[in-house]
Length: 362
Image 1 (tube, one colour):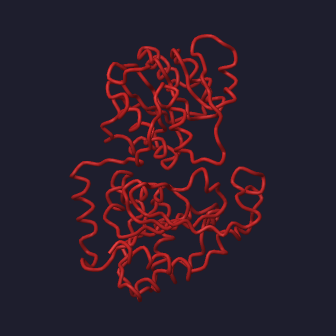
Image 2 (cartoon, rainbow, N blue to C red):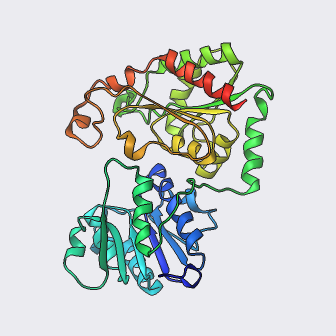
Image 3 (cartoon, one colour):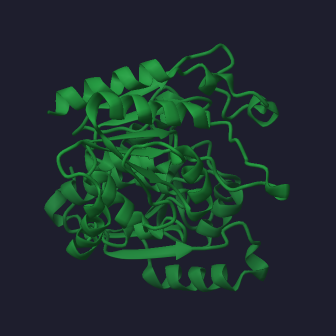
C-alpha cells in the first residue's frame, strides 16, 4: 500500500486543448495534490489555455506548446520541448490527449510510465521506455470522472474537487473598476453568445452551437423588466461587434467586454455575476468553476461527457434532446446547416430558469 506522505514522484499532466477542455483537468491536479502532497506536479498545455493555469499554486511547473500539429522534424519548438522534458525525468505522465501525432511527441519524453485511455495510441504499441498503463474511457461518464478514475492508477482513489481558476488581487481590483458603471443594487447577469468571427465577405459565422441574436435581445429585455438586472456581454475581440448588435437600441444597462479581459480576468468577472447565461463554450465552464449560478443553452455536444460541472453552485442545462443530437462527433455535425437543436430553445424557458436561480440565490 502506498503511503501518500512518502509519495514524491514526478508527475506530468498533459491536456493541450481549449480553455474548457483544460479546465476540466484541474480537478485531477487538486485530487493528486490532496492525496500525494509531496509529489512534484507539472502540466503541459496549449499556449492559448496557459493563462488559465498561470496562477494555480498546486502546479509546480507549467509548460506550453503553441504549434502542436506541426511535424516534429521541422518544429524547433517541439525539439526544444523534448530536450527539456527528458531533463525533467518524469516518473509518470498522464496523457489526456488521444491524437496519435501528439502521443508520438510524448513518447519522446522518455517517462518511466504513461497513463492514458485504451486503446493505447499507436506510438505506445511499439514497446520501449514509457510503459503505457490504460483504462477504458466510459462514454456515459463525465470527462472529469474519467480523469479521476485514470488518476487512481497511482494507487489511491481520488475524490472530486471543483474545477479551479485562480487570479491575484490586482485582477479583482481591475474587474471591480470595469463593473463600477453598472447599477450597484441590481443583479448582474453575464451573457456569452459566442458567435465567433465573421467569415470571408463579412458574413457572420453562425456556429452550430449558436442561439439566434433576437432571442438574446428578447431575453435581456424580459429579464430586465422582471428583475431590473444589468448585463455584461463577454466574448473575444472578434465577437465585439455581434455583442454590439445584441445590445443595440435596448434601454438597459449593458456593458460589452468582448476582447477586454484575459482568461483570469474573465474568471474574476464571472465570480462577481449573479448569474451567467451561455452557449456551450469555455465561459460556461469558467462560471461553473468560480461558483456562479449558470444556465447553458445546449445543442450538438455530448452532455454526459462535457457539460459544465460544479459541486458548489447550480448548473441548469437546457437541452431539447432532439433525435439528431448529440451529433458533435459524427458526420452529421459537419453537414448541419440548420441547428434546430439550438433553435428549439425558447426565450420563455430561459427567462423562467433565470428567475428561478436568482430567487434561489437571494
